[in-house]
Image (tube, one colour):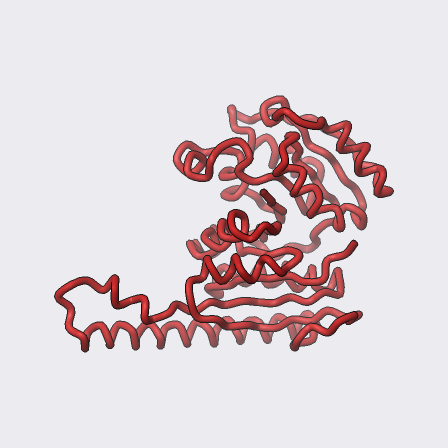
Length: 289
């Protein structure tokens, strides 16, 4: 079992840099293909939202300005992509069946970003998303939720700072849910190559389902011996306790089920484990639903 195709949606150079470095690191690690995707806004969608009372000429000027701005952003992202791939020694071009070296390509599409990202993610082994706090990129958060809720595939939240490694030391946050099981299945290719694996459980986080010891036994059938550790919430915040436990272990990758105990809207309003991790993780986080 291996990982052969990564997808990386990018919207701005500020947020894309660390995620691009993470994507190229993973492409080299797996001799896989990285597709960097930039979605340009469809200027035809501007007119319905421009407001009544605006002249046709003014709306046309707005569309032209949007196209110009989009073109500049695309060129900046392409230049960053070419520079990064050259530095990393990753070949630029289409992926080839049975390729034994990493490759990457840059794709530009026009339309609604959340829709196109979700569609492309359905045929990627893993979608890497820039950290929403990197460059304060709202589009990154939208892309992350699009993959989580509408692709059926896992997503990797990239750290704000380019990572030195991904998957050498893996923390598996486990609470017994189907979402946690889905994330576990997605992280297993990394687990098989890891130097150390730790399963993190907590009474504050646990839900009805298999326990941590059963996860440990399951992983052992794949030839990997993981250890088991218990963490506690910090100031009644389960996400803070989870991240602290992963940091104590020295993890460079953590897997977890996303939005498994409450709706996304409820977590956005009241806070929750997934939201805390999204806002505060310093390492790569693999999430699934």
